[in-house]
Structure formats: C-alpha cells, structure tokens
Length: 160
Image (cartoon, rainbow, N blue to C red; front, side):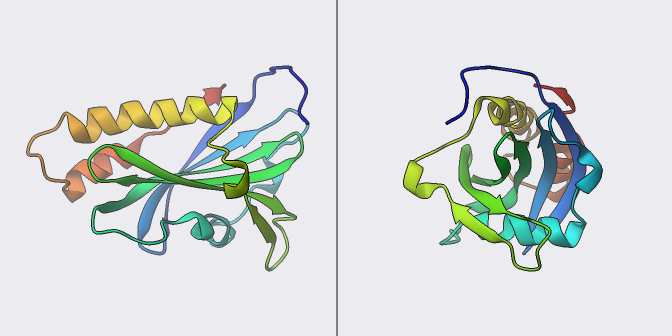
C-alpha cells in the first residue's frame, strides 16, 4: 500500500508516436526515486502502450489520444487513453514488470477498477482542456488532420 504522502513528480512530454494506427501523445511521469535515464525507445513505447488500445475498436474511436509511462514508487505503470465519440475518453492501465525485457509482463489493472492516480490526473486534466480547446470548440464540427495536429502539437511539462 502506498503511504498517505504527496511529493511532486516530474512530467515530460515526448511528442507523438503512432501505435497501431493511433496517434498518441507520450508522457513520462517520474517519482523522485527514479530518473529519466532509462526512458524507452519509440519501439518499446509502442510495445508498452499497444495492449491498452481500445478493444473492441468502435466506429466512433478517433484514433488519437495520449499515453502515460509512470515510474511510481512501486514500479512502472502504463496508461493508454484514446478519445471516443465526441467527448469521452477510453483508458486502460497496466503495471509492467521489467519493461526492459523483450516481452515484459503486463498486468491489467481492470480487476481493481482503478481509473488513475493523483499525479496522472493532472495530465488527464491538461489533455481534457486541450481536447476541448483544440477539437470541441473548433469549426467545422469535423475532425480534420489540421485539428488533430493542433491537439497533438503541445503537451504538459513540469511538476505535478
């Protein structure tokens, strides 16, 4: 069990990666006991986030969203978040045992009904605001490449 303590963590935005046809903004979130020196390659990021893609894929999936790699006090967690319909977010989270392995063990958090932790919520809030500003408030009410590029251009960086 985690202690009832809050200490800020570093968030870095690493641009976008195409994961099986989904354009995902990539974030790292790092507890003070870790550093970013072991940040994975783009190929490894794809491997870590792909299991969280929507299943089943639906006609109203926008194939855009964001992924979080969170080095928490008790290990690495991945969260794959994708926009669905007009204004809903689909998310799947995993705990990863030794991500450096060729085929790391990834344990779904579905059985815990976990949505996200307090540090990840700040990134989700930023992404919510970016989606509203870049997509929902735009005209025309059609999701164009230009609008998607506007949404994926920027990301949150700093401390949470």
